[in-house]
Image (tube, rainbow, N blue to C red; front, side, top):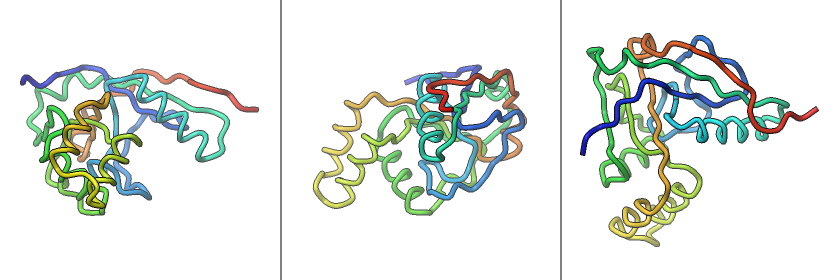
Amino acid sequence: METIVYTVAFHGGTEVVEKPEIRKSPRNLDFGVGFYTTQSREQAARWAERQRKVRGLSVSIVNKYDISGLWSAELTCKTFEGATEEWLDAVIACRKGTDVFAPYDVVLGPVADDNVYETIRLYESGVYTREETIRRLKTERLFNQLTFKSDKALAFCRFVSSESVGEVVR
């Protein structure tokens, strides 16, 4: 399977991010510490709305970036073509606090959203077998995420624009 190379990435949140930074999240995320983006504007907008609601703020923002130079750079990249056993093991490790992707500059693969994470939780608790978990994950609509893990990689993430999305609460 050929890796999809895209030139635009989106980041959803509650602020305009002209200069992306790698920050440790208070939660353990799918691919560990990094700056998270997606090829899907829809996914970024959903994440922005979720953050707005959780934080009790009035605005949600989708930031757009040009990442066209990323793919020709000499970076260490890890790519998952879908919900594989290797991806499952890595996401579980990262969500438990072990950043297995720390040596990489960039990680590209599926997002473990709430539905996906519920499946993973059932696997971890022994309800689903490994095979059943992978089968169920392959039926989900899996958005992708591109995580910038190093400043070297972030140099190829150039701010283009931002827009307010979702509800505006007054």
